[in-house]
Every structure is written in structure tokens, then in C-alpha cells.
Image (tube, rainbow, N blue to C red; front, side, top):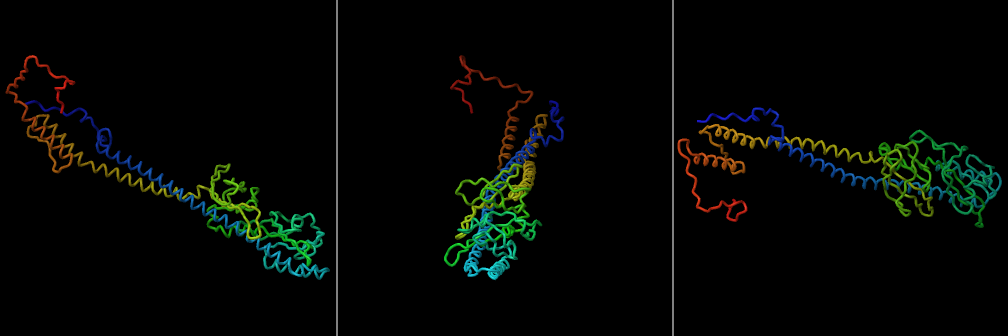
Length: 422
């Protein structure tokens, strides 16, 4: 009987960690395939979900900022129209149209203007100037007797209503500090012509409106919670300098007005890239006035840093990645343990084959119940081994003679049509 063959050298030299080497371990290959597939799947799902959610969130936030910008501009336009209309009503009273003279007439006009100021404290000053530019009556007697011929509000309101840009007037008291603790020293000029009984202009009724009033409007539209999230409101005079800024969007000085997509685009949202590298999502709305007040083409913007606006996208992606990591780890271990029974069957077949090769005539190839492909393969290999055992001649029996081929027979080659390959 032949001596048992020694196990292969590579079997003895194989270390324990071969189980985790995908080059030699079927379980490691299955685990690696499952892990890589799971990781790729999670990465694709994370990217696709984040991209889709970002587009949806951008449309929602952009539309919200556009609406906020429109509301701020509309409220300011309505407020200016209301105060301008009040000046027109006061200018139409008999005390102004009748052109009373003397101290009694000035006192009567002053009392009317102070009553209007008491009803609307945003008016820092109201006064009446005649055609010669002399202030005939003013609230608290301020500026009475001064000449205002060169003032823009007087020159601009001798024929129609006038609205000037915000500017500082050192002689007037400042408004109360805003929520940031800084009083706004600027005032908005409003003026309307005053007509006499014959319809001719006899003077100008002017007012200085505290510009802090516009800041209060902006803060009333954009909530305090939104301001804490760096959602800032900026108002531009046309496409020029900023005349109002809530100052919560992360800059020291407000940036320039954004470049709108077209001259006839009045509302919308866009992305802005600033010089310091910060990117902003900006909603905008251009003022178009209210009723007979046609507005000054002011531009209102509502901005928020893109990183802050799309923070929920990153949070969602991180959450998906965390769940996906757990899913991938579970899938990897599941593939490892799922392949364990198949590896056990293959190891059993290998051990049986090694014993048969070493001369153990009692060993048979293991067979596994079932109709799976592995069971069918084990059964086929077992049948093959048993057939080979029955066909191998014994050592004391002579080998059967080789078949005699007829004379002139030529063995067909690989390309011969007589050769049959199964």
C-alpha cells in the first residue's frame, strides 16, 4: 500500500489570518463584495438624496426670501404713502389754505403740526415754509424764521410731492436705539405743495421722518429667530449704496447691490459670491410704490449664508451616512456568516479528497441533502470518485492491452471534422 502523502506545504505554512484574505478566503471575498457594494450604495444614496433635498430646499428658501423682501419693500412703500397722504390732508386744511397771517396764524399751524406729530411720533419735525422759503411754523418752534430756499425738499415740492433719500440732520434729536443698541441718525425728507383758495401754490409743507422707522419695519417682517440665523435685510437706493441694513448676515459693511438677471426682473432669488469667499442665497424685490406713490425704485434684499441655509442638507447626509455605515457593517458580517455553511462543505470535500488521495479506501466524498447547486456538485464529485475507484485496475492485474487501430488509420487532429468534442 502506498505511504500516505504528506499535506501540501502551503497548508502547513498558511497562517490563521488567511480567513480574512480575499485572495484565499471565500468568506472574505463575499464580505468584501458585500461591504464594497453597500458602501457604494450608501454613497450614491447620500449624494442623490442630498442633491435632491438641496434643490428642493433652495427653491423653498429662495421663494421665502423673495416674499420677505417684497413684504419689507411693500410695507415701507405703504408707510411712506400713508405719511405723504397725511401731509396732503393737513395741507388741505383751512388753516393752511386760508393763508392766515401774524402770530395767531403761525400758532394755529404749529398746533396742527404738533398734533400730527403726536399721533405719529416717527415724524421728527414738521414745518410750513412760504414761497420765499421762510419757515413760518414748525413743531416745537424749531427752525422757525430760517430760510430753506436751497433745501432739496423745498425746491422739489413746490409743484408736486417730494421724497428724498435718508440723510443726517444734526439739529434734530435722534430716535431711540434699535435692537442692536445703535440709534439711526438719518432722516427721510417728505414734502407736499400747499395751495391757496385760488389753486395757486402758497408754500410747502415739509417733514423729516426718522429713518429708524424703516428698520423697525424690516425687523417686524423678519423675525428675531430668523435674524439669529443670519438672515439679514438690506435696502438699496436703486442700484447704489445701501440705505438700510439689519447687520446680522456676517459682514461689517453691507455689500453692493446684487446684479439682477435682467432690467425687467422685479422679484426672484439668486446666489451671490462675495470677495471673502462667502456665498449667499439672496431673495430680492424692487420697490414699485403704492397707489399714487410710484416709489423710488428701491431694491430690498434678504440674504443668508449658503452654509447656514443648507445646513439641514448636511445634517441629513450625515444621518444617512451613519445609518448606511451600520447597514454596510451588518451586510458585511451577514455575508461572512452566510458563506460559512458553504465553506464548511467545501472544507469537508477537501478533507475527504486528501484522505482518499493518501490511500484511505473507507473514505467517501460527503454528500449533502437538498437540491442546491452545492449539493448537486458534491453529489457529482462523489459519483465521479466512486466511478474512478471501480475503474482503477488492481496492482496484481495486468493492464488491458491498448486497442489495435486499423492499418492506415490517422488520428484526427483538432481541426479534423471527424473529431467530436463534447
